[in-house]
Amino acid sequence: MLILLPPSETKRAGGNAAPLVLDDLALPSLAVQRAQAVTALAALSETPEEAARVLGLSARQLGEIAVNAAIATAPTMPAIDRYTGVLYDAVDAASLTAPARRWLGSHVLIQSAPFGPVGALDPIPAYRLAAGAALPGLPPLRRHWAEPVTAALAAASPSFVLDLRSEAYVALGPVPAGIRSVYLRVVTRTPEGSVRALNHFNKHAKGDLVRALALARPRIGSVGAFRRWASTAGFSVEDGAAGELALVV
Image (cartoon, rainbow, N blue to C red):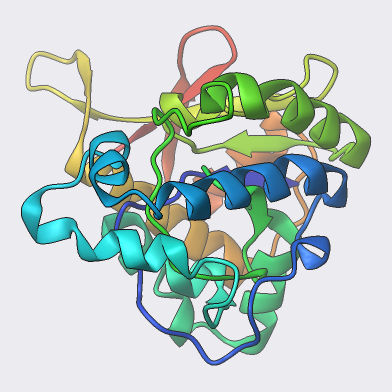
């Protein structure tokens, strides 16, 4: 089983591990694309006005330019600890047991904008870059990442993929057609009996699900196996659109 997560705009600063080594990240076939994106992001920081425009920074966020300038030399920390925000606060990886964290390292990829998918325990620096950005000298990130990431996932050949990414990050690396996968949407049931999508609680529910999986460390190789585990773990999962499931909260 492989779980695909979105990143978060908010990130924890600092780190106590050595600077970024691209060859040490998951899916090493993406090394060329990673080097191109990291180089372009650092170069963009040399022109602060352009960087602010491309990154969509407000006056209070201009410090992010210096963060990007140091992307190749800054200290790192595991990706699952780097990202903050609703989803990652719900996972609360720092409080997990060592076996649970190792399970995350083996079963979770986080789809970042500058590095592509990285393992949950891969050491990465802080950065500022969103999926919709277009870095000077590179095509839009969707074109930069989509085909190489899909090929890398195909080569990894996971038995089953649970896709929890937002649609913007799905576009950066569609799951190959030949791999068993399902996209999970979080919904709530209205008093009338219909369902509607959630925003804030969507992220929290995904974080709760990932934490529960890490603690249980189940063996899941199909949609059916995931649904059976979810039912025993107290999660309500229903059929959704084609290729999708709905997590009802």
